[in-house]
Image (cartoon, rainbow, N blue to C red; front, side):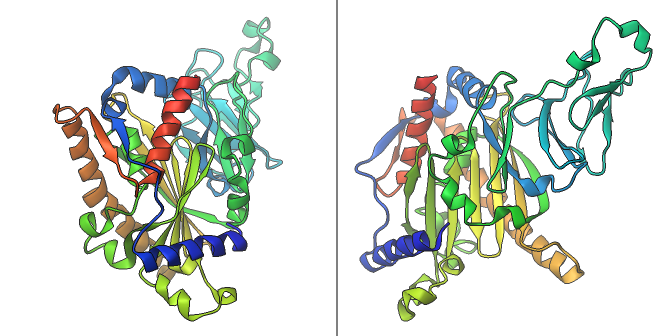
Length: 381
């Protein structure tokens, strides 16, 4: 986020704090409960967003060096990402072209090739088929046309995007709709991956994104954890196509009134929350970055998600490790003990017949924008 944009957002927040208000939508928005319960809609979302669309995987720091690789199965499509010896990132269907077995599991570094565990067909980091036992028996199947099936993949602004559709194509800046300038300013290509954790929860994937869509709930749901650190119901909102950005005010934010704008440390007194449509929440917090990635499970009321922590310097001593472990554990404890159990209760309530729609208030413009964007994308598809 550029310095000039930080100042603009900080001025907004100071006004909101003074007037005891927040960023406001034009009106309320009633979101159908079926948005979270309809199996037909869930199937359309899987197809549009997680089979044919493109989504953010995380920071490039997940695969910083030649020979680094990782599998990605969260979308329901088996994906293999690998950085070749020249540092180029590739993405492929994790499917052997002989009999369809997976050629890789998990993640790793320093790899030179991938060998299918079934019959030993061997593929390079660039996906090319480089060897297979009993070559003579497959002479009619040209090696050049039997490499791993490539997928559209792109690196930009220190982040990775991929599409699970071999016939798909996308442009990162088109996806970001102007948010690229924001992301470029963070210098994300300098960050280091610390840890990723995976969760499986009984809630629709969009409820996971909703969790980060307003600060209205802080004083009520997080009275002893998050609320003492932030102003509740005070944040900015800006849309970038289907994406959006929010700045939430820390409890220290009023201190900016005491110093000239040229000395404002906006990041030290806020948290920046961005939704990279459709399913990624990017959070910039003082000295670290978090990315949250929400994917639909097998049923409409299931979510598979992973959260990654990225830090500005690699850990080189026990004290630093203790610091980041403590931060990550506190973060996860909050969502696992407070946010997500509440969302799971909401999911159960949606099936009770209590209401046909839930209401997003004027003080929840990000939620309104996200769900309108989902509806528009499905309609366009």
